[in-house]
Amino acid sequence: MNRRDFAGTCLMAAGTAVQQSSGLGVWKALGRLQEEDGATPIEGGRWFSAQSPGDGMLFEFPAGTLAKSRALTADMLLDGKELAVFLIILREGEKGRGFRFSFGALNQCSFRMRLDLSLVDQGRWMSDREGAFLKPLCSGDRVDLALVDRISFTVSRTGPGGARWVMTPLQMLPALPPKLTTPVLPKGPLVDEFGQSALRDWPGKTRSLAELTSRVRRQFEDAPGVSWPGTFSKWGGLQALKLGEGTGWFRTQKHNGRWWLVDPAGCAFWSAGLDCVRVDTDARVDGIEGALKWIPGRDEFPGADRTSGGGRSQTRFINYLAANMVRALGPEGWRDKWAHIALAEMKRMRFNTVANWSDWEFAARAGFPYVRPLSFRGSRSPMVYRDFPDVFHSGFEQDATEYSAALASTAADPAFIGYFLMNEP
Image 1: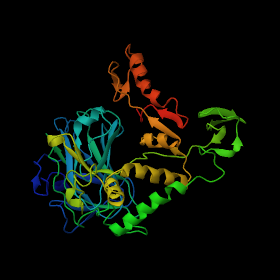
Image 2 (image 1 turned 45 degrees about the vertical axis):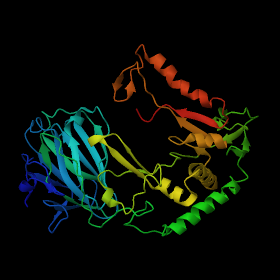
Image 3 (image 1 turned 135 degrees about the vertical axis):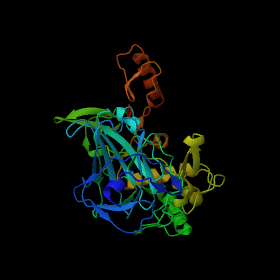
Image 4 (image 1 turned 90 degrees about the vertical axis):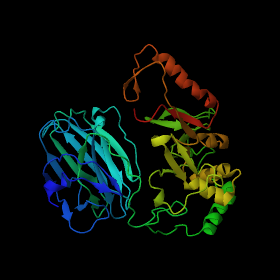
């Protein structure tokens, strides 16, 4: 298949046809992109390989070619065992504004790259993850499709050995294509019955249920005896650097020209924290259930298999950590037992802060220093850009007052360090 044909051929994958569209023209190779001959696991695809970031292809066409299109799409499969990140840039002229769309790929599982062209207005920064189509993000500039006259498709990040992938022709379509519901899995299932990679091996990989159960139970039994080093204060502060009498609360103090956090006992506190201290292995699996060797039953493992939404918008998540805890510790009280294990492991590794996006309530009950997140849901002040509110709006002050009211529940807790207003606005 030559380059002209590649830009305009109807793509087929997993038995689902995507309608044919006009082509984007002849593409030019960027960097050291290589085409390879040979059979592919995706019908109508071609093998490509890239050695360095920036390797890829460039399409040039008359301005306005994309104006009546709704989507760009291609079916892909990333070979190997290491992540690659791809980048699509829609640009208005050679040096004009550029809209950037990046995404990763799950190795050895085909996916349909779907770029909704309505995203070019930059009203959203993230599109939906679908199967092996990972973390699609928008950045760069807002562009006018009537002015866009070029598209680059490149690799932006690879492992040490570069990236190799199969790709069907890049298409522009008048409507979003259907999601890919039956991916190709050339190496078979990707995840074993414990939630581990089935494609990789490493020292310490769990080999059996007996091994899993023995290790987790031992961690729980050992947890009460785990502590920070003797040089740490009760709160994880530095006993060797006492900055005054304790106030019973975390605070700040300037010492020798440097600002310090000070723990409730008056010791300097260097906060070393872990984000997301929670049973946080929810993996979205709708559309790729065939990649899993085992799916925990909902009745036997409550919380390990859940869905949200409905109809075409329904998503499904599997939590292997939850299933493993139930298998090792039993269905009753396993979450509290997990918390004892998690906090003990943090002390063993000398972490002294349960950081943002965590189940901080476990830390509060244990007297372990923590921060907590807030979530702004202003009902009066409008958003001026994405999720950033209009702080000059007459209703913002009342929204902010209600927003801060959530902190009342931890105001009297000496283990409470502080809070996060939100993630990046």
